[in-house]
Length: 195
Image (cartoon, rainbow, N blue to C red; front, side):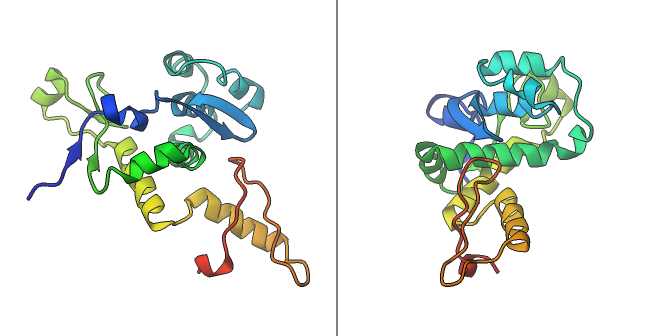
């Protein structure tokens, strides 16, 4: 029996695309799409990142191709994408449920524009050359889906929780007061959910 594959983030699966319109708040800035948030993350200056808040995803991508990348971008981009995808689905419950509803389908960001890093290009040239895409976005989405299905906190949330635990202690007779994290979501994990 073959595993179900979703090979294009279009139609009923457009919600998987980074171009899908949905508000995403990161570091106090609200973007119109995951693509805009990702392109903004290439900037080291918060003022430059804010310029991406109002632009549609195609414009954000075009601007993102022309800006000077922040130091360490190539090493950090996968983790940044994972954090943005987590923000997208944790802040948009309807999308989270739709992602869960993909069950165990393999998510493949199929495209025809030669993106073999985030997806798998199916253009004639890539197919004839036997190019196999890395499908990084599809893998990140599947990891986020697994987290949602299991109720497991993300890498960013776990890091923030550990920092918070190192800096604070609970008030006598009360549980810890959780701060807002970098995504604008309150951390409300019980001690028993983290080992």
